[in-house]
Length: 232
Ligand code: SF4
Ligand code: FES
Image (cartoon, rainbow, N blue to C red; front, side, top):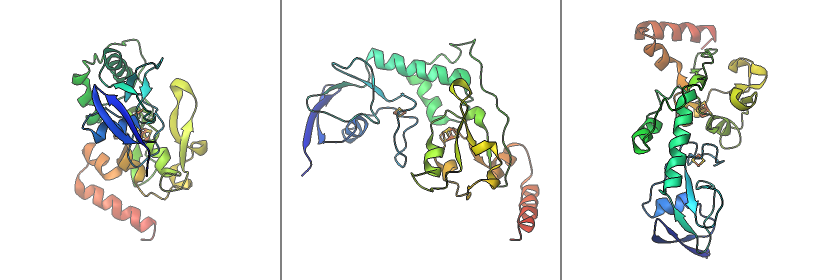
């Protein structure tokens, strides 16, 4: 039988199995902690830090999507320090990234009194849209580097290893190896990366063409031409 751990979350006594994350323990007890990079089907790696909580005795705020519960732990999910941290993370994201098609993130703005123009000197990222295949486009101006697409393309699902990151720091971007076009990589166009992307940085080509004002008939004719070219 799994060892049982006793802790408190937001003054509420909680009992859960050893090895459970603080995030899951909170969810089991109806306490919602916001997440962005976390996805149930991906390995959690604590990249965005929106899920941080305050743990009594800990020097820093703790990312609840990876931190495990321990006996006697006292957790606060909505302390002033936690809320300020979440607000700042959202403001930094808004200052560099196009979040216009990220409804779940935008929904957090009101909750945390986000000032979208708090960092007016920040330089937004504006890489060009990559349109190198007939299935989907990649608009990395909308990418928050949550890493989910890389993970499902690798050992979390598809084992294709078609994408990874390029460059460092501010210039970090998801890319193919040596930046070659996707059709020349090991990509099998399974679409799992599109499914887990929280910001619409990865978008089905048809949807994108419709947004660009192209008529459905024209899109269908392009699709037929593309199929003929591929002999299907
Ligand atoms: S493209 Fe989407 S899924 Fe991939 S890292 Fe960027 S935001 Fe995350
Ligand atoms: S949701 Fe936990 S660090 Fe992103």
